[in-house]
Image (tube, rainbow, N blue to C red; front, side):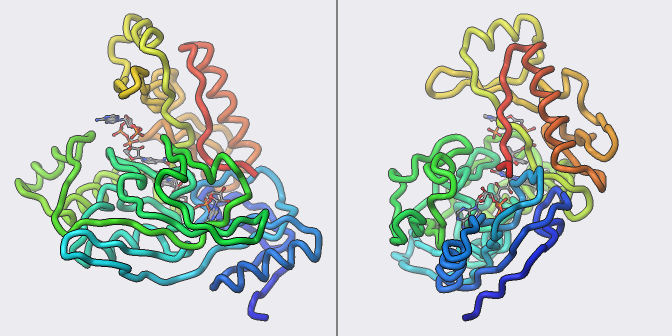
Length: 339
Ligand code: FAD
Ligand code: NAP
């Protein structure tokens, strides 16, 4: 019996918003056996089990009447290497950014645009994490998850995961799949994605004409460090809203009214609006009420200046949603998982 179950544990250190709620029970899983033991404990004591990773995509609005199981499994292994393509597997509890750095140190490219995203490997497929024009679906080779309904292990192919913009099967079936390990197919030769936002510009400023994957990673880290608050300093969960997809007709109408509207055409004909632009245009950037606020540099990020509760952050988010709908007829969907 290696699982240590503790009672009444503050989750403040375990969510990047730094919201102070209590978990009725708390444990860390260091192995598959711990995971199974925690699920058995939950069944035996009739208490639900909530799995978390780094807590960087959570909004906790009340004490959690559950066994909170933090994934802390470790291990990275190369499964195959044909001299060009390398399949690499990491355990769910591996911290994401150090894993990305590890792949870069091995001379592998594919994950560089996803540098500095907080959280764990196991949570990455949940919302198909993405940044600077790359999503994990682009380099995904498979994953192994435990079906909490049947207790059986299942291997998922790319097609089976239903990946979409900040979405996946695992998000669509909440609480069913416990992701144990994830596999990525990476490249020995770099196929870099530099077209997004300020990435190429930053490399040019640095005098780098022919970047390596590590150069791209460093450029993205420097851009992110300038713009995004560090959760260790200022509580936040990254982008609080997804970028809304709207019809071309609505985007056209809004563009008529707001010529500087930021909108990107999608392959299916829809337009993706920059939610941060809408929120900033509506005057929320830098807003603060008590300790809940909208970040001064990036309007898409809600922040906790210290003692904001999850409900105060939720209330602020709902007021922003209502205002954006009234002004632009656009519905903003919250990104963090709410408990
Ligand atoms: P958690 O917040 O702990 O959990 C998220 C959800 O996944 C919860 O529903 C949880 O129950 C579930 N879960 C966690 N682990 C498992 C598992 N092993 N099996 C099954 N379910 C599980 N996201 C992006 O997509 N792109 C970005 O660029 C980005 N930038 C960010 C920047 C900042 C500063 C912050 C704070 C967040 C950012 N995020 C970004 C959001 C977040 O980092 C990612 O969504 C990340 O993958 C969450 O990982 P986590 O381990 O912290 O998950
Ligand atoms: P940004 O560069 O200011 O751009 C604003 C938005 O426009 C982004 O959200 C992005 O959408 C979209 N965009 C920019 N260039 C684009 C292009 N060439 N084609 C299509 N869409 C484009 O964004 P940012 O806030 O600094 O974030 C940079 C990247 O990191 C983005 O990809 C963002 O998603 C990611 N990020 C995510 C989180 C999170 O918590 N989810 C937090 C921080 C940063 P997309 O978001 O769809 O890419």
